[in-house]
Length: 317
Image (cartoon, rainbow, N blue to C red; front, side, top):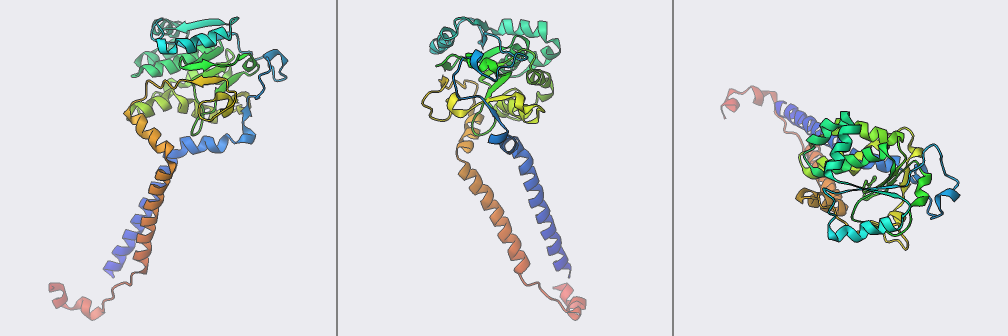
């Protein structure tokens, strides 16, 4: 009987471990599957595929008008040669826009002057890319305009995006990117992003995860998913973004900088590009546990008679 009770306890412990493992797996993967469930096609306010000039679009909202400003950032005024043509393409297509190149020094001064509550978090970020992420949200909140990474080539004028209060591109495998953003000054979502930066200043054991969730695309995705007025957020669809799908006429050509990615990012991206491997491993582990539990339940229990149990000779063996 003692062995039967021990086997029963072992089964319960194993089932508990399986349950806890599944719960932890659901929690850890929630940043990916939650946006996938929330941002369904019918619930998402996609940017119109028409390149109609902004003044002719019926979605024009005078309450949140994106001003004619292009923001870009680099550590100093010497933009690398490999990105100068991309930068110039955006300037040439928007000759009537104000162009601002923010350096580390001018960005620091801006934060200290206009966002003193954020300054303490901003200067203590362990990675430069976190400050590069944070400054773009603050600039759009304060000035409004369009932020474009230096490794993005502009192929079309972006005037029509001024009809939307806030625009973010859809990215792969789920969620939204922050390499291109357009926003009206003071838009509620921009304010939410800026105010949320200190509370999201987490260390997540690796550079890639830390950046992604503290200031990067997963930070944007998580806040957008929990934002009350999702209809005020316009999403740039894949064919217009042109980064992950072949498109006949995208807005951009992406040179794929991602200079901040380290070895940890390569490992994560490899797994994301091979979902079959992940699914196979998880299913294999669950199948192995299931088979083990079935064997335990089908195995005939050992029976002992009362006389055998009370025989002192058996206890001596």
